[in-house]
Length: 262
Image (tube, rainbow, N blue to C red; front, side, top):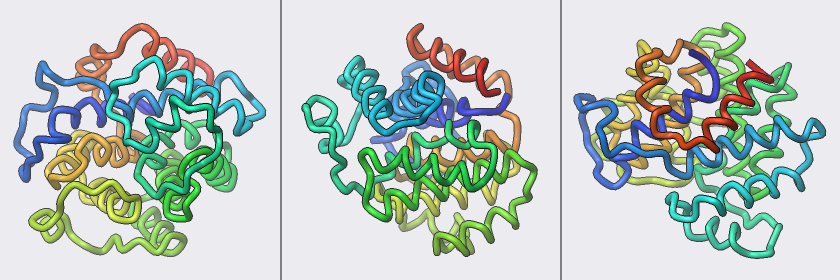
């Protein structure tokens, strides 16, 4: 299966290791205490926006994010973002956090050209993460997904990211892993998540790579997994094991998005 399920499954698989980091690829993929987090909720906020507002306005995106996130107040949001959700404030707050990248995958399945995908990714970030690094992380991730979706190989994707976003993707996971720790900035987590995809041989391998870094596991896996889901298929067994944890509200948003765009 392809699509935004790649980000959702990555989030759920990484959920039990977000604050219990590991430095190995050998672990139970979906233990019983797995759960969806803010990564899934925000991915589906964007999906709902794209389904319900074909003008793709920022105002409607803000409404979708605030509404859905407020339904799940303890999903693990960052402090500034949570304050924004439950306030009357609609202005962005200059974040460079990786939240802009972990939620962006739906735009890559809606845009019909790389230019449109990059434009929609920029909009999706700007409503909260309007710092240049926050925007860059979202656009680089969405562009990578689109290129993978349209059949470009890993070398092409790597060159696109390095040329347009100045991320160093020539590093190896074995060199990154020993010294890597929990990191929420786009600039220090998006490149690593992309490398997890570039060094992979499957969707599952991408997610295992991401979690094995020992950082922000669910978000790393959501970002890397969102690209891998466009390049590979997400195995049905993984889809079934992960989507079991979605409630009806979230599952219905995913179904509506897939029916309209996939």
